[in-house]
Length: 81
Image (cartoon, rainbow, N blue to C red; front, side, top):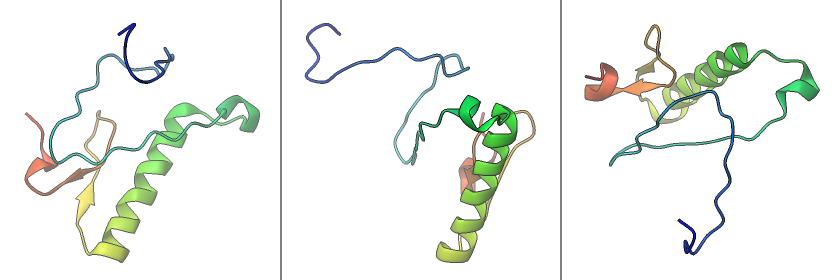
């Protein structure tokens, strides 16, 4: 990756490996939670809820969270393998 045509930054994001595949819509907000004294898990669940509500109210897309997983799941991908 030394010769990549873009900058690469290592971050401690609290996860292991993330796969980005066809059809996924991703977002990575960058927020200093320490400054706001927020808990990471509270923040993630709140962000997921906002996405679920926007998908429903704006696009009539039914989405939900899955217990034990981070993210918002839609349609046939509602239950990942």
